[in-house]
Image (tube, rainbow, N blue to C red):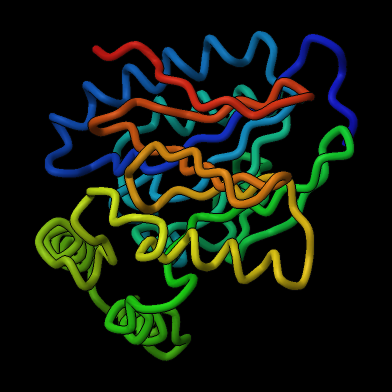
Length: 253
């Protein structure tokens, strides 16, 4: 994709709408909607890198209620001709075809390569990549197993949704999150993942979320790893202007 002059590509992740409560999330949702409305003026494409919701599950005829303003704004942007791409995170990994059918937004379950103005990007949420985090990786296999999802669908939403939301907030193994502090380049699993990928293929940029930390790490003379941070504490996002990638902060409420 060649980016038209004056247009930009935007990357954002980790809103966790619904946590710790629906009421508290609405304040953060309002700021996120202001950001979406602002960037739509010059956006060539928008990438949401997962954990938009703190919990998401698609029953056959039901999705979790709440945050219709976000869904409506994304539908409005998509309908206007601006491509929106969504990567599932570890909190909304049970997303299937709702976004694609209702919002015309493609959904990705694995990292995916893109090329903008000759620059190569590898984009994803970031959970379960690289070394370590074995407890979460085992848990993810259980959660994504078709039989597990089939069993969960037998729970009535009035029981299944609150139960999942409770564990999503309380259980660190389910969330897959370490303490949200920089561990050093040799211990950050996404940095290790990026460096291993560079052994077999060149990339200009690696874009991930999941760690809730805004990070911009130079991996070698050509490649950078950028983590988009979150919309809970940092209100950060990444912006590619066609030539360079910048990590930015949106004003807080």
